[in-house]
Length: 173
Image (cartoon, rainbow, N blue to C red; front, side, top):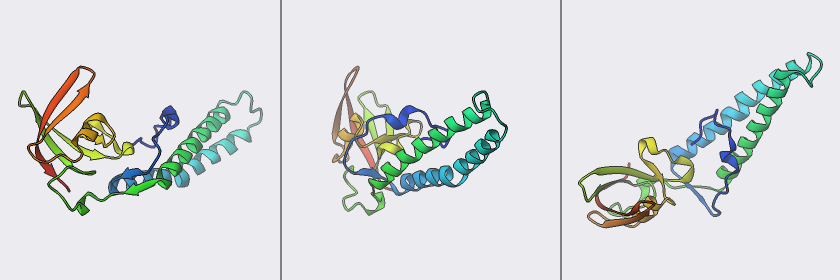
């Protein structure tokens, strides 16, 4: 998820249609970001813009110009968050009936042909964080893992060629 200060053009990227699958923690983080922006950041910036506007000439008032730009960024991010939350379908990984297969929310440890192990957690698109191994269920690796069982081979097409992994552990927390 994007931190509160990350208000760049990532919001304008085309997103797939259909449900927006999320884990309970991902949903809570997105709600918290929206609440922070709506209840804290936006009112603070509105106040700053009002103070800057009271200083007079707005055309050369850097605080006013920056404040208005910041308000547009906040409003764009709020629209994005509202759209994503409206389509959110929360999937609790602890409710999975068949814990011996990889489904949304699974934490999977896989080993490649060289014996290197990788651990991934299959999450929603808004929860991707490669630094902690969170991959999207729509990513090539995430999609290839879905439905696999322990000891299954996973073949993934990458820019450098086909990679093979073997599932060695599946967990749901």
